[in-house]
Length: 118
Ligand SMILES: [Zn+2]
Image (cartoon, rainbow, N blue to C red):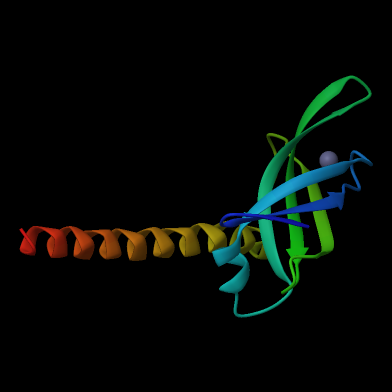
């Protein structure tokens, strides 16, 4: 695990490609979970037997940024997702939106402060 600014880079062995992948997550996201391990969802491309595939990947990450489990599903046209998978996809996005809102408010406040000092 390497730390780079606001991000943590983790490596995990992918069950599908049978290869090591890097995955980068925000420290804030790692620190702001209410339960561990938490699901982290992303898409990754895999080439197997000359065929490229897009895979829905859910990694279960613990408090220390270690990958505890994974769930990989091929993306097809007829995929149906379970409630858990959908929640796992949406939750990090909702958190991200909250962070962006907070940053936005902070910046606005700073701008106001700067204005008042002139
Ligand atoms: Zn893979």
